[in-house]
Length: 491
Image 1: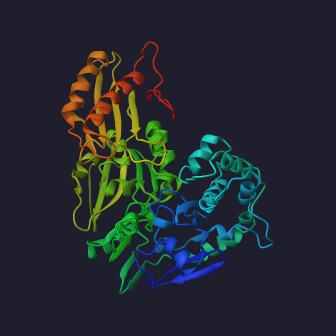
Image 2: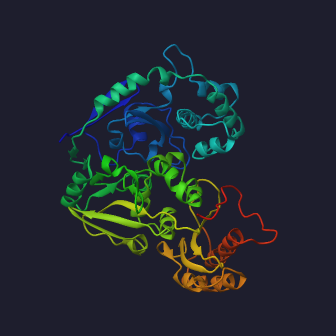
Image 3: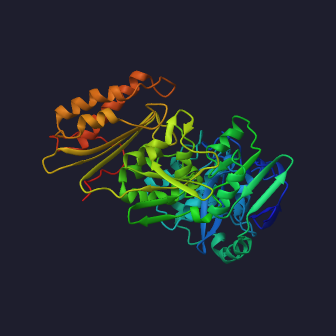
């Protein structure tokens, strides 16, 4: 057991033990280190002005991730290398290729958002699969907002920076690996101060023991939700237990019965495998938050918080996923849709946590469609998320159906009446009409700032029509997608 965390900020090593559970990376950088290049904008992980670069050693390889410092807690830096915009210039004064490109192509005006953009651009340039395609660059920068320059010169700067043969970090790679290797510690950290306690288990067994002993503690994986409790609600966190430090929960496995995603796995790492099985689910995941959010926000954390408008649960409910929970040495599994009991209530016992989710492989002839409806394409909360999964026989008769919605009820919910109206019916205009009527029985949505009851009912029915248009051979089929991939039937 240790009573501290360790990490590097630039070339400076830090070993900290007198920290609070609520201290954010942003506040520590600005107030304790006087690194004011990292800006506070929205303070909720939306604008990207506070973006920093966090480097980890995973499987003897460095991973470079853009992270929103405003909703990352300081203790989450344990075992990492942190870089801010102040670290980019070389000792001889030469700018980083991204910085030079922003200067050359006039990518900055007021400059407030610029450090965050630059850090996201550096993180993107470190990805092995980074490309100069505008769609890929737009995805990488969707979490950074600019009010004055406009995005065209920034995208051009990103393209220019990708042409640079190397940057200072390539020359420092061996040094960073050596540093991080020395920081790797198999011991659990337990930090206790008069202002709160922090438990950083390194394994699922340690997590199970810690949470069983302190069931009132707050479990934190990526903090993309809990971080806002602190910055917006001004809540205190007397005791936090980290999920993301349990390395055996950070697993993606292709098992005989499906795809296993461990509780500590961020969306960014699971996205490729999920997309391979369900391309439409991958398109929705591409729009969950931003790169900064997906880099730390976990698949299971999105389930665990029980939000009725979380984008992940409907995707996996329609796919027939099973949730796996653990309390001490006792484990159980339940269909994902059964986890959500009522608004703010989940089927999780005291001291019980999510270990992972198992997503079954698609059946032959499965049609799977997922549609996210929001006011903005990127960086927006869903008004409605509808997911349709069904199989048909050779005569076009629907043999199985799983339809799930988010934003239509107090929890993510299956449309059971609609499913019953479709199963055993030929997928034609008559079945569509019956399904559109049935979906009005399934849900009694509320009106709020994202949509009225009438709007939600109408859009839910229209999404059925959209699914029908995409899964049948309609004459002069209308275009139904602004962007994204159009799926074929699973074979």
